[in-house]
Length: 278
Ligand code: C2E
Ligand code: MG
Ligand code: MG
Ligand code: MG
Image (tube, rainbow, N blue to C red; front, side, top):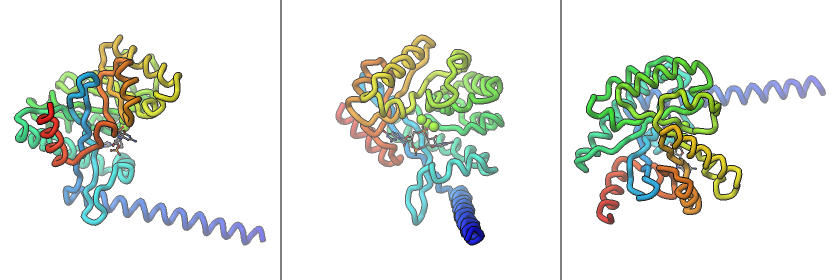
């Protein structure tokens, strides 16, 4: 009986493994095809000044516009891309695409909006981000914010600081994403060249229920102010969360309560509508 169980277990793991491998290769094929056919698109989520609720810019969030499956979210592909040799082509492409989006918005509104682009940790480690960044036309650099997750500081902090300084001297605005979830050592925050801290949505989600979370967020905002940095709260889903963040002095807000990430067409009509109202 023992032997039989063992065999069953072996077969079970084999099937699981097979399924995983098949899924991985299917996703990989889908990503390669998406690159070849230029099926990556950005959805843009508006970011608002907390006090005026004016749109001050957008975060660009990548999706695959799949011919049969529709819009595919990053959870399905971003890890695979980041760990593969496709990353270079992928990020190079996204940096070209951001320029298109800026120009398209300009052609409609006659002004540029700030757009933040997420960059993978690996492109910081390899410094490839500097190559992509240098492809952005000089006059557009000040409208591009570069987001990097706080986890980037888990290792090689000196190298990362070098890259951030280069980006800043080129004129980019730097945002530390998912703040409070990664390395989270107070000793690094004063050393890193950054402009904006994005308060992770895991805090925002609990801010109206948990006084300790509220205290943490209050401290992050005060810390940022003390260092001359701005704060964006992400994942704001309710009026209550918004009101607390406003009272705490958070500079900008972003989240489903205000708007979901929108296709470029939807962004264009959204802004037009907002302008009619105000
Ligand atoms: P992130 O940069 O922290 O982006 C925020 C995520 O939260 C986005 O998910 C956004 O759609 C979602 N979100 C915004 N507001 C709310 C809200 O009120 N409630 C909830 N529950 N979610 C909200 P998305 O677009 O699925 O992206 C997930 C992650 O994938 C991003 O997290 C980022 O780490 C990565 N990612 C997205 N686009 C890119 C990209 O172009 N390049 C790279 N390297 N990574 C990207
Ligand atoms: Mg982000
Ligand atoms: Mg992130
Ligand atoms: Mg984030």
